[in-house]
Amino acid sequence: MIQSKVSGLQNVPVILAILLAMALFLVMALPLSAVDWTDSVRTHSGLVSGEGLEDGIRVFRGIPFAAPPVGDLRWRPPQEVAPWDEMRNATEFGAVCPQPPTLAAMGGGTLPEFSEDCLFLNLWTPAQDPDEALPVMVWIHGGGLSLGYSNQEIYDGVGFAKHGIVLVSINYRLGPLGFLAHPELSAESADGASGNYGFLDQLAALEWVQKNIAAFGGDPDTVTIFGESAGGTSVFALLTSPMSEGLFHRAIAESPWVTETNVTYQSKATPFVASGEAQGVEFARLLVGEDADASLPALRAFDADEMIKKGGFSPFINVDRWFMPEAPETTFAAGRQRNVPLIVGTNANEGTMFMAAFIQSVESYEKALDETYGDQSKAVLAMYPAALKEDLAKAADRFITDAWFLRPGRAMLRATSKVSSPGYQYHFTRASRAIPAWGAHHAAELGYVFNTYAGFGPQVDPNAEDLDLGATMIDYWSQFAKTGDPNGNGRPHWPVHQPGSEAYLELGDTIRSGTKLRKAACDALDGIIAKAHAAL
Image (cartoon, rainbow, N blue to C red):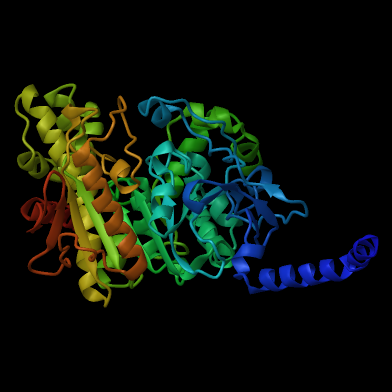
């Protein structure tokens, strides 16, 4: 008995060796993801550590994609972020870009901490193996190019991750810090260009995706950009910039905000607005005062918070002959935009969120149209008449919907007939349950697209109809990101937008197709704008 015990003990090292060998064999037989894939990922700048969520989804928050655009880097193209040696904690969102509290207040919240050091992105991935090569969607937030941030509750990426998408949301410089053009800035630029810094930030984020997304299980060759309002404006701009080539492969523009006054030339006025540089000089004088130093060093030293509080600056797409070589609608009309599959859509009542500026009186409404359209204002007023104050709300809603969103969206869709990639149009019509008076208002589709059901006004729990519509919309968006075609999986057929039929899909209490959405009004607006430009 004693001898047998001793013999057994003598064999312990052998048994341990056998067990160790068996364990090593089993580990080596496991997929690479089981041993290498953790919440830590190596980017080209250094290691980042994220957070595990439900269903195996991982989120990485506040990853810097460019150097802080502060000090001498204010009003310069984004620079490469400095690498780091230690593990970077990516479990907290980064600071948002300087802005007024307006948008956060509209959503019933408070503005998070902001800083000029704000060029961060967030990433949700469902990948269990870095070799999965899942489709990628890059979200560009709205807010008039002056407001907004990537980590708003409504933009949570879990819903898309559950649909097999790696979702990336990005910050970009806003307001005067993101879009100021100025003769001195143009002179110091090797490319003779100024303004558009926010768009250049978006390019830098897309370049980061190309370099790093494979490490998170994403496919750099299947990238979809999508955005709403100013995010749709950004998609509009990125589609027409030669600098975006190869950075994305599909695009979705939700309610692209493109008006006669938010596109101009760097050194030349349009019929509707002064040149970008002229606007920049005017803002600089407003900032520092008529008799103060308005040199670049002084402007770069001006406190960002005070700059935002001053107000008085309206961002614009700047035709700078570099990022934007020509007017973007000219690019679309000629078929020179990025040849990628495209979804563009608008909501039935885009104007209700903005019409307060128009409805104080019939006189103020007519004055606003006159200031924009000049000699053509009477033609616009005839299309959207408001002889009585009780007519103002309806007229302003219809005008804003058509002129600011639907008309430019249609220009993007019509351009797809000049390239090989298809275009798809949607018309969102489900009225808000939180603010019924606003109808299917601007941004009302976002809660459905992301399956977050958050938004403006009092929060209302989604009912069965909301959940059904949201499930359908995120399916369409995800399928489009995967294949370039939103159709499949038994959903109602979404027809291609083509000349002649100009087919679209209504997304609302019913889902059905239609043709020639507001064609007569958009045709008339096109003619009015063309006459104004011809008189230049």
